[in-house]
Length: 364
Ligand SMILES: [Mg+2]
Image 1 (tube, helix red, strand yellow):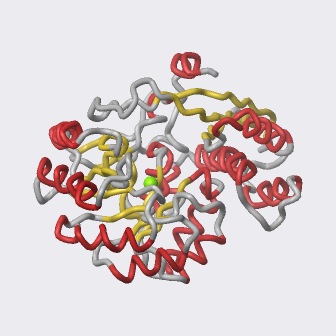
Image 2 (image 1 turned 60 degrees about the horizontal axis):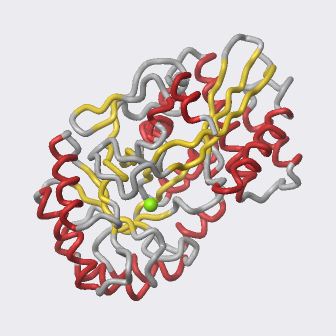
């Protein structure tokens, strides 16, 4: 089989909140790039990536330049292709930024082709540990809401059958620790003791703030506290992880494989979070998961649940999938939610088909 062509498109998808209908800012948009990679066998692989921000046109240009270099290659030889692309970008060992986000789209499309050619769903090709995965509602209980709005949204999520959900602290306006704590207590009160509740800080605290506020909410029983300080402050994160009973999650901001080594070696987190675009696609995703497994650490995904349900389901240490709904609207069908879990299908490859009407509507 040979790659014969490609087509990339920039889309502006909405960041509305279809899960609880309580958006932080109605109509807010986020740019992403989709890729179709074609072969002479009639199999088309699809890729999706983001994190270009205002540089998304550059991200798309990087994808096109790299995708052009895959034409004529055997899509089954993913490691060979990725090495060629790294060499072409003058980055044989390194990783980061737009180059890695661009590689991610191509790598995802190559795995889609490989699994489609095998007539197997990707989660089985990657290991097939389980056919349904835990998932948590994300994007509904954000820091910009009032406590009252967050409580109402949380109740909606419970009514919809979610058994895991994430809120945020590091509230806007530099509030006192007492005010910060009020947010997670309010959400916990709304959902009861049995729902798993995560809380994201998005790198906005200093380590000592994380220890102070984190220790005041130990009794809330958070499933994890996420990105409590600057993502590559491995020793600062380790101080927080050692000081708190609440598990600390992190990793979504790391580019490529190597930073995960430093994060894990420094005992910086209890739960390793992997972002499929920043890590560089499915190939490095699975390598980071295996590295975490060797250290007895679970892995979780960041955004794009329709793609990362496959990777989390595939590996034995996959813990839960972030059900961030941003990209779900791009596909005709995505993994089904059942009793708060995601059910993987037996469709070949990613099991995803672009909804052409949605693609047209979101085209930048
Ligand atoms: Mg996060």
